[in-house]
Length: 240
Image (tube, rainbow, N blue to C red):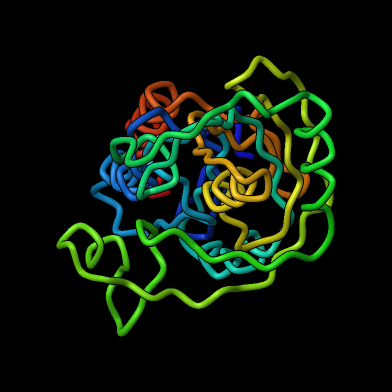
């Protein structure tokens, strides 16, 4: 992670910026904010792994020649913390959409929750949410879903290395997950409810690690933007 400890930053040659993505921002919003801060330099800027608007946490931003490393960073294992809410489902599997079905929680126990979590360790098959950024026929499926179109998304295999139940306060379950690239935590929450013959949705999500990169080392976005602008202005005579 670049710390801007000196005025020799070269965004064209490439920098890796760690950002703690704010709630309700899209990953592209963050990229665009940083791209605007780097102007008037015409430099490529991209992110390594989308976070949903309702998720917070670690987002890796690459600039210049380091954008070629995006696939490398995306392939690394991810760690998330969050909350699953039992007894209700939504079409998006999270709070982006309104609750569409409710379930009786009288048969749900701590023991059942812990036992069910164990079913998701290892290689599993999951279907990405209809409200997701993957493409079907060249179009993001969430765009189709928001138009009310029926979307068929093929299941995919992912690997869950750890699924730890941190705290149970029914209907809320706090968890920690370590998983492979391509894992949808929203789908994990939805499938978790189904596995207990109940319903569930993701009510909170935070990405804390990507490989060896940690959100503890990430910038708050306003601080990063200010620092980029300060460095660019201070180093403008050096043609960085």
